[in-house]
Length: 180
Image (tube, rainbow, N blue to C red):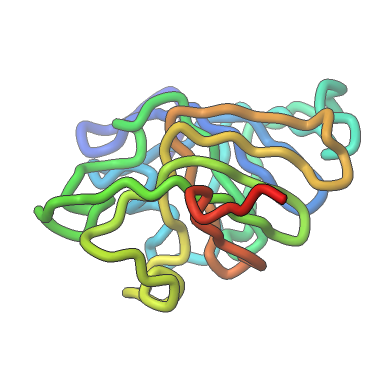
């Protein structure tokens, strides 16, 4: 599907994609299920990023290339930053149904990035359930901040972010942090 001809069932959405070595800023054509539906779709293992600008993680402000289309393997994406909460998708999809949500302030680490934000979860916080529930690999956090571990100059803040739970090393509740 061409970038300049979105259909009635698709819309163009701006997003920042973070992989091990690159930051990719571009646009994706998302269905009515939003980026959550696109990125967690099990029938495809890649995502096409349109009007993509790439930068190496260790030099985040220096653009390397500009492409009409870049294809990225979903499993290699660590996080996706979005401008608005609504860009993630319909509430029924992002929350897994119509239930009362509890906000949990969390800190998430991966081998490359650290993220902080609010994880919305139905009921009591259950790490094992968050990490294995359903078949979705990407989980939303809100009011998010991302920092590269070895390159602290790479920082991103976003109203909404998706993190790839397959890359998570640590997920901690920030209200359980002890001050020594």
